[in-house]
Amino acid sequence: MDITSQATTEDLIEDLRVNLKLSEEILSALSEENKALRGMATQDLFRLSKLKTNLLAKVNYLDQALKDRGLSTANPLSMLSNNLPEEQAAIIKQYCHGIKQLRQDIQTQNLINKRFTHDTLACLNEAISLITRPEPTGLSYGTIRRSKQYNTNQPSLISKEV
Image 1 (spheres, rainbow, N blue to C red):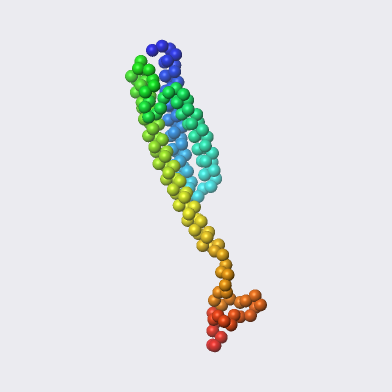
Image 2 (image 1 turned 30 degrees about the vertical axis):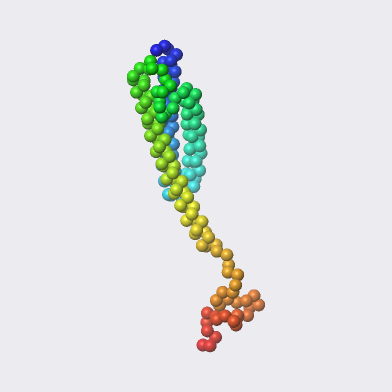
């Protein structure tokens, strides 16, 4: 193996290490987000949303760099040369497997957070609609007309015969 391919392999391993670290940070942010959702901590949710956006941008950049090198996390050694030392190949496989596992955990946690948010919003919308129901259009039992006269056609809460 020549020096340039060794440097490229070391850069690749470093990119995979950084990608793994960023994926761990995203999973941690999603766990924090779940706690903030349960605690209804809106300021934390805003902060975590910005953090997730920044982390995802970095991960997407690294993923694109890996694709440009012809590497996918599904089959990490498919495009690398066969002259790769076993220890470097093992490190690359380990990082790719770790990234793949973290991405599945991220998808699961993200789905949990989305479902929790959806269920919470549905409950809030239902509560708001119960509280803010429109006023009935017809006269209700025992109400007074606009002219301040009692409605003689409908019974009143207090019987007039008593």
